[in-house]
Image (cartoon, rainbow, N blue to C red; front, side, top):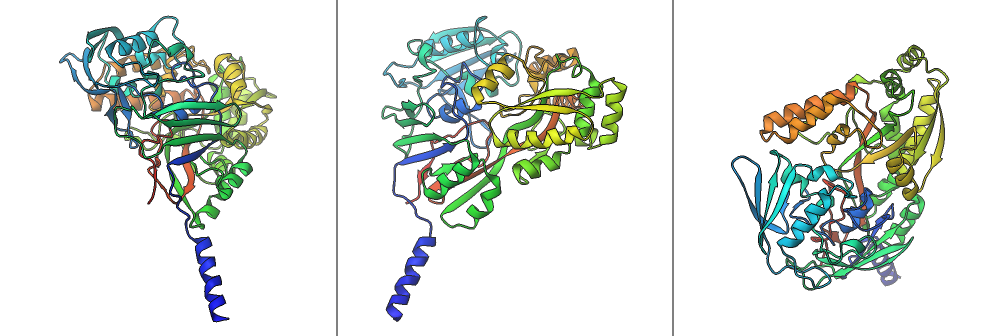
Length: 490
């Protein structure tokens, strides 16, 4: 009897202990499926979540702490006037199709990204480039039309990766880069599979295979983690279940920050939303903490402008638009916008679907009705982001330091303020840290006082992983599931 009791206790302890797989493969859960796999021809963050640092590389890259690090450029020199960057490239680098990497590929990629007919979603990253010159196969010189204090930072974005002319046109469905993993297959609606690139120029990754599985439903995501169908879900869509995972020794919960400013985007082309008083009314109708608690179960930081709270230049401007329904009603009446009805388009992420329902209820309290349309990601990109056919939408902008989108009148929400455009032009030409900080803070205050959008919260990075996995990013300085340092504990 005693022996049987010992055996039962041992079995119970074993079942509760972390089960660390001795494996060289990993399965990663993602909420959204990428619309394509070319980060130079699409705005969706899901593209970069698969490809950044795994398939594609740029001259520079972001580290897990947001630092700008060498990538295909091993080092560089900057001229005294800040107009000429000379990059010394790594030698012996190959693309996944066996093509040798050289300075010609850098020139091709940068010229293509800044061309008049470029489809790059972040074309402004390359606006300061006036000429790209091949010095020799391992050296390229980039000349700017004006100093750009963020140029090396810009070159680390996923939109600035280096492509081969031989394969660039097919990267949407068959991505070929220089990274440590190469594309193997894409089963539409289900998964993308990568395998280790054995001829990679750098340190070989510990993982031989990686699968990205697309699970948009929060309940299905929870079930997949519990069943072990996925090993990690870095951006877990069911935050209400995180406490259960924290109490289970088989899992680790990884909570960090992202660059994701979650906003109620307003289409300034709409007759009512072009009026600052109406935008201010909607902002005062919003109760940020209620949205964070209801949609994100407390995970998230309230914001009053389009800037990340963890950045040293952040201004907390939430007090400019406190929750004030009476003020909202008065502003709507003053603007002649009582009885307003607006279309609210919601993409698939739970922060948008859940948050949108809460926002709709808050707006209803001040007399604004909304017609909610739940959209799939491709439909949202086509109709809202590209077509600008919307009134309101809830979206998290996960690109790093992207306040400059408010200097682009043609951007999907259509904010057009010459003062903002002047500030961003001056920022590009400023390298002095104190000068840049002052300009960034002026820009934050300007868009907050203009009520350019409804600023909600900074998206937290709340993920779940098998406890045997190490090397996943805690924070997300850029949308990425960088697998270069991921391994199973031995």
